[in-house]
Length: 444
Ligand SMILES: C[S@@+](CC[C@H](N)C(=O)[O-])C[C@H]1O[C@@H](n2cnc3c(N)ncnc32)[C@H](O)[C@@H]1O
Image (cartoon, rainbow, N blue to C red; front, side):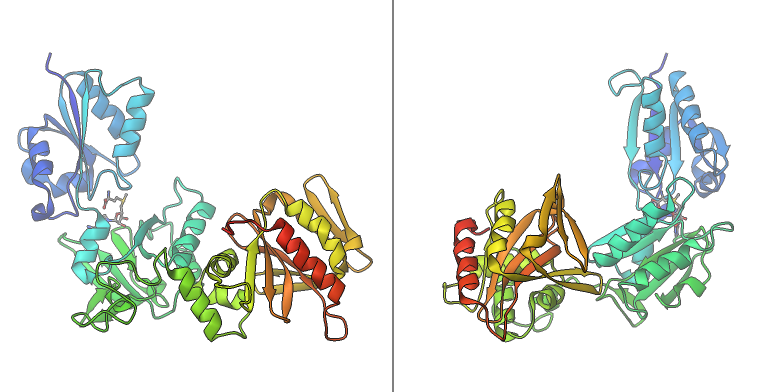
């Protein structure tokens, strides 16, 4: 008996010219072609003399099982999918079905995945060059994915300033998902952010709408559409949606000289190695800004600002100084803080700031919890969440310790409090003494 084979074929967006040579050859080679009925129509001129199995939209697992059954009988089976078969397509479910049935790659039936142009790059090509920088795709279908997962991914894409391609944006039954996606992205992105809605790209009924994030949900959108949402620098010019590659960060104009401090072929001054130096320059140029505002400016966690000060500070006399506390000494520092007199605990959370005046006699620990309690408030901090702590000193203006979590975000700070306009000398000296005792030697 002939060896069976499963060819998992992505045939591109629809038009025959955008099918790869290998996809075409695979369909021609197959004895049996299995696919969703619309896909079968799109490749009808390649099907002469073949057994064709048309399936409905929801019969995905049936398609996989049937492909396996034909292959077990020694047939060459092409399971076809539009775009790329591995992108929201049949490749994953087919492998799941095969593996569950005990199939292994070295055991008889060969499986080949044949890639194709997925909807996001086909649709991008029709509207210009919207994917020239980092992008992601998110399917709005909640048929198999819980909505909180989709919402979390939308939030992350918004926060990460990714260009976003929305697959399965809307159907007859699922009409509110696109509205919710718009709401979530608008929390992070401007209403005028360019959006392209491409329906049936490279197919007979192709239609393109250029719009904005604010108006996107009011446009005509359906299951045959992919929605491309720009990042914060995407623009529309001459009807083309373009996401810049980033040349403006380095050059005065596209063909001009590199900007001061920048060099062709080298990382930006804001690259990994040197961006901390930029933080220091910014701090020097804006001495009145607090650490929180500087972190917001760089859109970076506060621990990165403290790390920049700690590693880049040039002398012990620098006005702003930071030292990382040796990990493992955080408890010791909390205990030592009882020698620093009155303290101000600052807790920030998304636009809410609590400033609590305390004295360290109100500290106690139980298990993982640091409890700061007095007649006016109870503050409970899970010490497991403290990943790093930093001494920070800003001349005569501020002294204290910043406690950050594993993402580098501020959990809380403990700051020394002045009495009648000055720090008590003995307490301040104790703070500096402790900062020397517990600081991490290499400071990063
Ligand atoms: C189940 S996914 C299949 C994706 C496919 N495997 C791919 O790689 O393009 C179906 C979704 O893909 C998008 N899509 C597929 N072909 C398209 C086309 N020709 N034009 C626009 N969007 C398309 C739509 O968002 C549609 O709801």
